[in-house]
Image 1 (cartoon, rainbow, N blue to C red):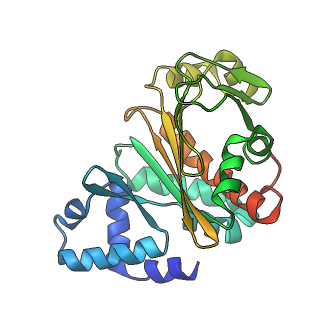
Image 2: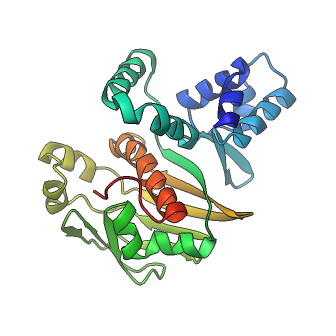
Length: 262
């Protein structure tokens, strides 16, 4: 947390974070546009933000895209806010965002966290139903071969669909699959109204990718989810991933998930 607070103390770095908040996934050139800062200075500030895990990067061809990373802020919230007055804090934050922010292209969500574990153990936690059910409340039925179908079981409801499949399976390195189908049974089991369910079902199917990278005695886990730009699912998953991944990290590092499984 010390690195995050130090990084946030500089107004230039806060300005860069504001620009990513308004439009996530920018290149260095795009971030430099319109700023009264030299390209080298912007690059140095981004390096500090990456070091503090407030910014994460994803390679797309020759381009390096920069994304806000919620992990450090989520850790601060868990330590000082969530235990005390979470509801009020979230309500005020939502109101502030509604008053100050304009709509943004929400096509991609990126979240990076560092877990004290091995790639093999983390891979097991991402694929073994005995693990996923503990920190996520979801279990998968699949052989994990690319192109194979997946069943999702959550809150007692199982969903399956021909387009609900494994996309990438590179053990201990990368895993990707399409998101689950928004069935009536899933909605009823999770308290989702029919209007919202129909809205989610009308969106282009989302995909999620997990990238694992060893970093000494830790593994850097980057979760990337691609959404329909005009859809509703982005906001739901953006709020859902931080507690899920915090629970995964706690489970692997302490043997117990964060709080009770849903």
